Length: 321
Image (tube, rainbow, N blue to C red; front, top):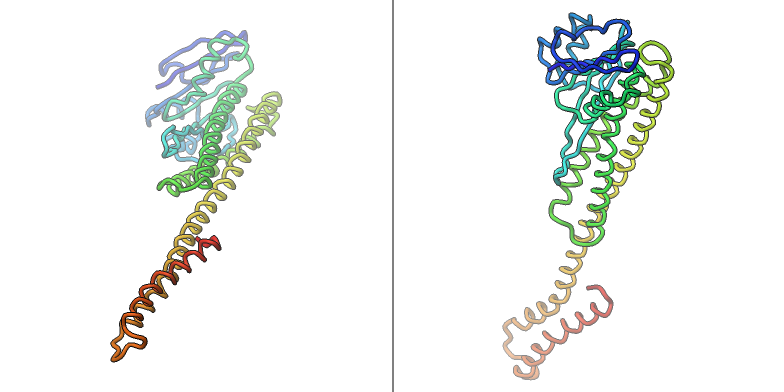
């Protein structure tokens, strides 16, 4: 569905709907066209009226693009990604891919699902007259800034989860799903880092422009977004290091528990070994038992108790148990 926002030179904002206004704006007007849940006919209309390159239209038909900036004679084609983290223990990521056509006089955004920061910018432009007077590139900056800011709650949630796992691992017996949670977080971090790296390059490119669709004034704002992406990248790298440490601690803890079990089994075997020898030796068939069979039988019973008990006392005193 199309929706259109027109902003004139005096900052007046008009919200329009329908296909009639899906076209380059008249002189003195900045136009933002937002298309959600696009289909082939709607994309063909964009290609016809804006003369967009077929490759960009093809990209908009398939939402599996990496973050990038493609330059064309009259516009920039920008792909950015946002993420939300589900509150469930599975830590599932919800990806939000946004395609933006940016020219000096218009912004066209295409996305498959509702994006909360984009909607917030839309409402802000409708209500704040001053925010709507800075041009198409500033609208693109506001959208990009909102999309990038979606990462901070995700990164904070991951950091909190890693700290929780570390405390569980180091505090004692761990829940049975600890290893599964560690690897789920690892997959989340890998997915985020695959996006954040290229997205950092996108905003580095936009922040260095001083002519064309992105003016020198707005390039400074994109530089701030680039700084946010750098901070997110550093936070993800730190989370990756902490997660690797938590995984190593989990494996070390499991190894220590195994070693402790093996040590106790070995000590138990050592305690019972003399008893097994005594009972095995005196279980042989003798024609004549020395010192009388009754005395030897009593000595055997006493040794079966005293020898293991003495060994147990020695191990306990040495703190081997």
